[in-house]
Length: 270
Image (cartoon, rainbow, N blue to C red):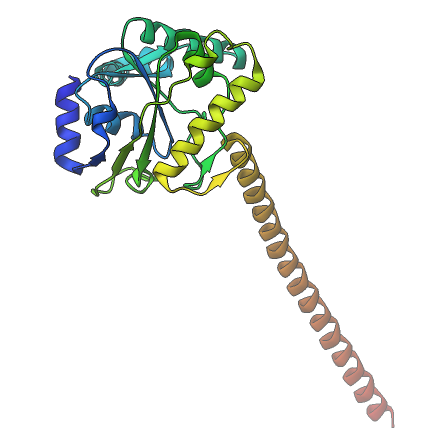
């Protein structure tokens, strides 16, 4: 199924690739990529001869009904591995364990150090947990990967993907064997992660932002909420102002009528 899906993607989108020679023909390796789109986990495996295993939410594999079964079959076909993400710490430990198992079986393990998709196309700070811990626990080489323009194919909220050519740049393997067994040192984890992110930045040409993507998403959501509330207040203020103007105009008109009525009475009395 992987080859049928990969063949269809390559035929429809014709992705260009640089650095395929950096993927080992056999043996374990970690593919660390930037994350621009939901489709990243499909395009990268599509251009490789070897299977790449990414982790995915367990819910993708357990949804009920025909649609659920088709979804599960699709994710299995493209090399996705179900991981129970219940609880923040449990999710991280499950991902690390899954990655180590893939590496120890001699496979290619795909991971997104940013932890989530970029909200605006920029490259965000890598999380030091999964990537560095798997690399240091196994001694496997880390291969930086840059996805190019995949966010333009199907932006959030767009149902039908746009037919265009995305790109993939694959860098040279990074060797962290000098830190083997030091996965408990948070300074080493940070250093390894930052080195990988620097290589991804050079490959992708993205602007780097030294905060986590999850924090950036919260900031964007808060700003959108503030703008929405400001717009509502402005609209409400406009209605109140118009109502006040209408009421004042009505008062002035009534006063004019009362004054005219008083004048008419005076004339009548005279």
